[in-house]
Length: 282
Image (cartoon, rainbow, N blue to C red; front, top):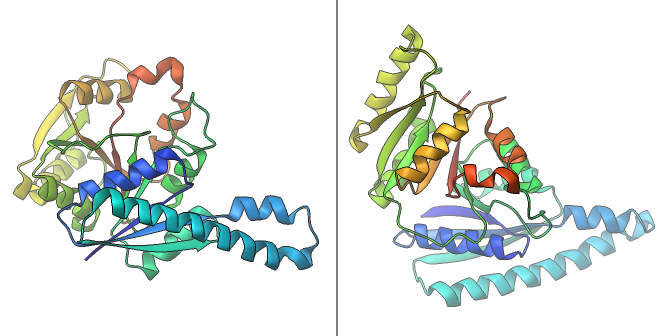
């Protein structure tokens, strides 16, 4: 049984991410864990009251948000009617990122699925602060980020963007391979030209990657380096009818910068498709 953790702030985008997850894994036996962190609310409220009342405030918040999670649970059961899917609720006062990492271990979570932005995010940003924080801090499970109110579409092509700068491991690619098999999707390996040829290290990593993915018949796509890296990637994604973009999250890479800098002014440059972030095995 797959365990899928889905954080919620009770926004439409969070519910859309939950719906997407249930449709993506429609044919699988799954346990969906609906999680809400009320850490921010607790901090705001307890800063105004006597410390002795903190526990009472926390208990009241817990009861309130547990009831709201129960409403979501009943709604998704009605909307999906999938008898292969079970649901569990977790309400916590821990910070969202910390709680996710804790419960990845406790619940043996296979995927975390969340919306790109929540109820408090401004309209002119592509990725909310909570999602950016989770991207930076999640360690032990792949994270699937779903664009705002995105409708599920069967995935035919998965783009895996990489620079061949590091060796790969089977564990790092496990979620990518699984989703390729699950969706019967092709894997398109994307690399942007920076030099005319790969150096020796990149060449070795290129062959290692294709050996690890050989069962999925990966296809190599070399993108011209005429502009910004993400301009090149997203231009390809839009043309190739790609259903999912995947990357390995290395420390200090540019994934977070991409979403922090994306605004309404340049949002047309960025394709709005689900984004799979694979944790590194460093």
